[in-house]
Image (cartoon, rainbow, N blue to C red; front, side):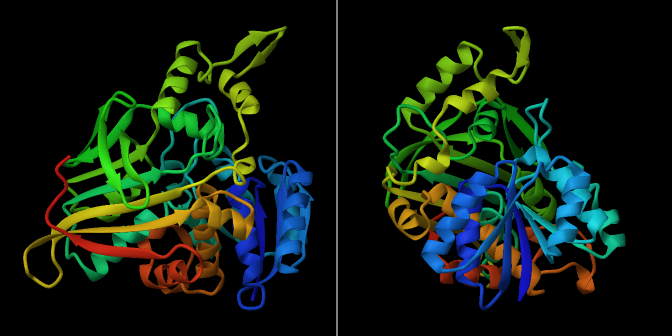
Length: 408
């Protein structure tokens, strides 16, 4: 069993820590939780204690302060640091893990504060340093990225010799009763949605205006929903680790009310990340907006319905019977997620894979070549033990063969 240090105290972190506590006697011996606001950590720890009887130690930390992070890591002495803070903090936490000589895991790639851009290049550049230190950094162990990438690699291992086309479909069919709210961190969510869409096609990135490509799709356990073409970071890693891909796209559903509110907020400048002067001080409009919007971790009690997230892949069948198309997906209930952990399904579907990724690392089921160090994406790991844990810990999946490639 292993000691872990979790950084961040939002909904995803809450789910992850609750799920770790359920496995205290099998995998995670001691669980430590730290964030900038210790009271949030204390609230999660209290919930975990009430639901599982497990104690979680809590700390206050600014994850961007590397020396302070190093001191905390050395105090706790974990075998793994699980980064569930903001993507801006990925690199400082990786720096701290390098100094302290501890393995690292995250669910989302690095994103600079002053630029609405996210890509893996910054983190991939750490590979040699982690390799030389003999420690592992595992990137993208959430749902998307994360489970969707593992779904893809499971299909390639068990169903398809090659994958020609891939579509990732992310549907949140839940209703939280708010006029406008985001399903995860508002600042990160709105930066993603308002960025230009990009998809991989014939060996290059094709860019289109944000929210300009819309398709209706009938999702099981949800119904017909409009989904929009977006860029998401797993497209970058999948294009690298599935080199035969001719086309890879990411789609996410949004209701008309969400789109209307977002359009108005964009038009009045509230989604901007450029600083503006207000009463003699610089403020970032998007950060102010995030401060006044409902916090995602507060939406669990009122959110009803299901999420449906999965991949549709077309390629040469493994059994030599020609081209085939498979649809692999998970459906998660908001109500069930809240009953188990006190959080809605969007947090649940990211927090559970974060726990499973952590379990893969601390048990040694996932490691670098010959157990060595380095920076790795989940696509580079054996999907089977992860897929088994999804079924066992709240995110069961199904796979079916479709009649042919998608027509959209």
